[in-house]
Amino acid sequence: MALFKKKNANYISAKETKRISRENRKITDEMEKKRNRKNIPESEYLSQMKNPENVVEFDDVHTYFFTDIGTVKAVDGVSFEVPQGKTVGIVGESGCGKSVTSLSLMQLVQRPQGQTVQGEIRFNTGDKVYNIVNTPTSAMQKLRGNEMAMIFQEPMTALNPVFRIGEQVDEITMLHNPDMPKAQVKARTLEMLKLVGIANCDGVYKMYPHELSGGMRQRVCIAIGLACNPRLIIADEPTTALDVTIQAQILDLMRNLKDKINSSIMLITHDLGVIAEMADYVVIMYAGRVVEKGTAREIFNTPSHPYTIGLMRSKPVVGKKVDKLYSIPGKVPNPINMPDYCYFRDRCELRCEKCQGSYPEVIRLSPTHEVSCYRYQDRPEEGWLVKEHPGEEGKISE
Ligand SMILES: Nc1ncnc2c1ncn2[C@@H]1O[C@H](COP(=O)(O)OP(=O)(O)OP(=O)(O)O)[C@@H](O)[C@H]1O
Ligand SMILES: [Mg+2]
Image 1 (cartoon, rainbow, N blue to C red):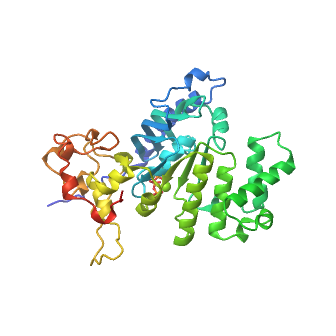
Image 2 (image 1 turned 45 degrees about the horizontal axis):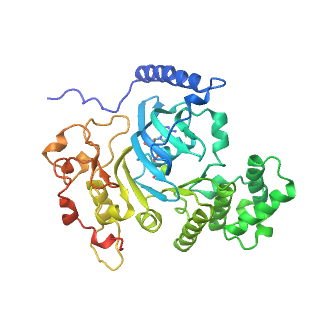
Image 3 (image 1 turned 90 degrees about the horizontal axis):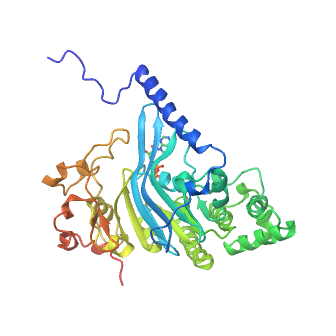
């Protein structure tokens, strides 16, 4: 008879928490000390692109949060590229590390507990290549806004409620062009507001954020983001808070502006419809790692990782009646205690004998299509899943 209750695996005593916290402090203090040095030489943070056609290259990036209950491996070895002038969609379920990946690129991860501990994020400004992981804050401030801009999910929280719209857009232009005369700054703001499709730009210039609708606020955020013609636009769920018609307009707007200023977009979303419409390349993330990546056509027409196949199956299709929408069984593993085998194995309906092994290597299915799954290890050329799971409904046509 079991007299004692089984100890809860997630239970951590106060003493243990204290010890973890002390150890964390030691690690993060050291990292912060290194970061806060004065006059860091350029040689420490300038790098070379693997392919100069890319704007960003994530290379085995690890971003961890050192919390009192353990280390959260939010981003655990992510590698992908954003080519110049292209849109890369990042998909994955809530908590898989999409936002932390983009925040790592902007160096906006909550410090000191959040730290990029390994890997390189190379950012190409045209004349220099920065390894963002080692770039000091002073150099980073010049990159943010000028070279890369972020559009957030919630436009109301991104705007300051106590300042007029005009002042908020002006501020960005002035910050990045300190010598520009005031009248010119205002003219540029009005031009930007017009560009993002705000009809009454003189009126909106004098309004406060609460006087605008959600769609208009998001347009203002886009105007702020694009005020300095950035090379890269990071859009973290830019249309989640908007209704479908406004969503389509905002996506159209982003696509047009991207072509006009010739930049690239990193688009984070869990809406596969948005990805199909916007993205040239797709990166599928699961539990802090990239499980599959490829061109949008490859991902939609021949989804190969069991997780991607599950995602495609759980998408509702107009005109196809089903009793119950498919959902992927199980839940994401605890980010503090990741298993040493494939993170998706316990939920995978296609798992096999080989999946007992350590985390699967990346397997190349085509020059642009890569997947981390044991099922392809010995037979990447067979493409059996292509036949078995053609993803007919979601196919992107030629
Ligand atoms: N400041 C923080 N401190 C501790 N853990 C954090 C912090 N920020 C994020 N995390 C953890 O990092 C992991 C990844 O979070 P992230 O915000 O990147 O998810 P996401 O993919 O953007 O999800 P969503 O689709 O819901 O926005 C989560 O497990 C989250 O709990
Ligand atoms: Mg997020």
